[in-house]
Amino acid sequence: MKKKVITLDEFIIRRQADFSYASGELSALLRDLGFAAKIINREVNKAGLVDILGTTENENVHGETVKKLDIFANDQFMDSFRSSKHCAAVASEELEDIVVFDDDRSKNAKYVVAIDPLDGSSNIDVNVSVGTIFSIYRRITENGPCTIDDFLQKGSEQVAAGYIIYGSSTMLVYTTGHGVNGFTLDPSIGEFCLSHPNITTPDDGEIYSINHGYRWNFSDGVKKYIDHCINSDRSRPKPYSMRYIGSMVADIHRNLIKGGIFMYPTSNDSPNGKLRILYESNPMAFIVEQAGGKAITGLYRILNYKPESLHQRCPVFMGSKNMVEKLRECLEIDYAEMSEDQLAQIKSSQGV
Image 1 (spheres, rainbow, N blue to C red):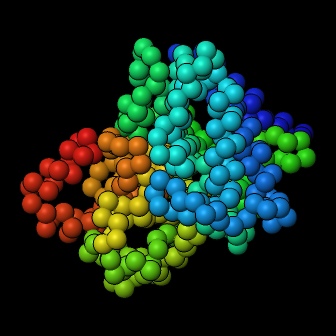
Image 2 (cartoon, rainbow, N blue to C red):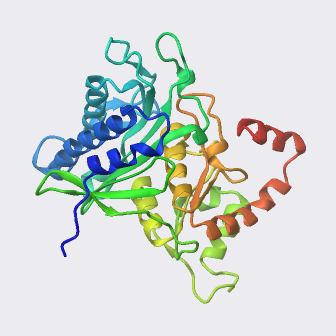
């Protein structure tokens, strides 16, 4: 018998019963994200045929050169949220401050969205997979328009998170805290269809993902783990395979399916790490944990980290749980050299 195709919209409606407080707004917001992703997918696929490749003369809030597709993706998601009545405010990697929707349609919405509209956009000119990362929180302000406090919540407070990967096929992967499910865009019908139900990442893997170019700037603990991966201690029959795309979405997606660990540690150039907590680290950590993996900053769980500013960064290690645990063991040499005051500061910053 032919297997019934389950679309994203149908799946979201079915899962609405997972939430005792559900009124349909979260479901509608997830569908809004899926709709905007279809438009971005169309432009990514024909990027080489139109004037959408390359860079602009502008820099974003992080001092990074803005790609044309960065602007396009950000505009598409902002338009989608603005026209929806289900989102009260948005925080985007491309914008310095939050955008509050205070019109009659949106000012009483229950949710806020943090988003990286186009992760890995530096790869778009060479036809490498890029993606979108999103995170959804219930707003905490009760009266008046949203404030930044609605976004500065621990990752454990997320009600939904996901990513869209624009590659050989386009997939939307998301969680609402009840497992992880993946949907592949069927271009013949223009719908995301359930293709990867109940994604579970292997407890072990054969892949480690890190930018080796910065190895000599990493801590001793990270270097020790890299040595373990390349099997310099001969503790394994063979070394791990190093795979690093430079697009967080693509690297995490591969490791989530096949098993592996993704690492973006601190370095001399980036003492606080490089990845942003709110719209990169938190949503990906939520997904990885829901798939059975682990996600840490080095000493503690990423989802316990309460950001103090909109674009705050943190070190990131996430993936198969046994690999992350081995990494944690290696990192003990870093923390053994710290004073009690330094350790207390780390605990305080991470809400421990």
